[in-house]
Image (cartoon, rainbow, N blue to C red; front, side, top):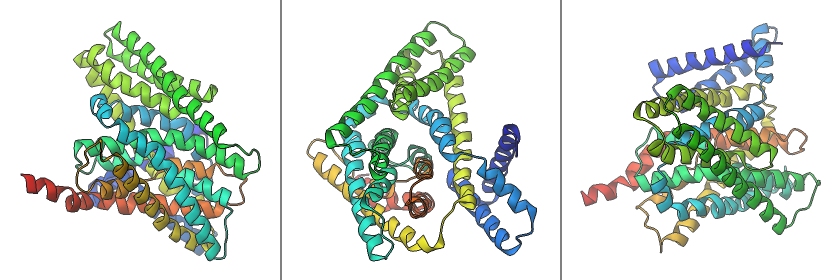
Length: 420
């Protein structure tokens, strides 16, 4: 059994090595390159395990990976820091102008996607002769419907998107995961027979989690803002921002509120009002530089972990067809939910040509979906849902992430060139 320090040393060394190999030779966008290399390393381990079962290296590496609790590492470790780092760079004035779009995509869009995905997977698995209960299909819909903020923001770094559309994509991704995590928890209890909540109870829980989390983030963010404003010492102010993230997320967990939403609200407050009224230019450089570095490092570790996790997943090849049908079902649900939201709001908000195509193809899923499905340890549907989740995550990051720039050039840029 490796110690925590040994495990961290192996993980960080692997991340740094793979990042160097990608930057030096492969030259894919960093997160996508690390995921691809992680998947490749996992497949190599699996092949080695079957061809040379007597080798101890494969067993040692697999045992090391099994020591990592992916759910805990993501949901109670990396996520708060990654969301805060992303929220710091959100322009509040642009977000206010697009709040109706972001809100519709994060709430109505997520709900529509969840239902369509559930119905589609339920019907598809029945037709394939490996039926999944409708309740567990709803669980899958809840965990895969929301776009992943880490994956979406990482993808946006490598493509150029109009400002309004970038706000829609990043704002939706930052908000919808908090709502989806609550919905996922409720549906897991329902599918497992632990409770039978009605629509009113679910709505009350969502309001408590979402609005309670937002209020908590506003309060802790304001306290941190006042503390930062009262001094001018960048090292202490960086420490205050670290304390803000950890304390806010822990308090949200203890109060049964949404940790993701609370740190996003706190991050937006510090990144806008804090940067404008409470920080000197030197402090801004250090605070924003520090969180950009945290974002880069944790992003790299997370995407590599997603790829490496394949080596220890109990995925049955018999569920390959379920994995394959899940991809078009999720893509179709994303299209319907995006198109519905855009058409509904087109009277009050302007949208660039190609918005539906870009929002649909830019709906990238990532570590949060993987973490949620891995938490279903006692579920009879865990293995098929795991296969379906990984198929969707790998497809959206590796295929959609790499081709999003092409979609933008084909749909949005022709209009811009026509007006130039």
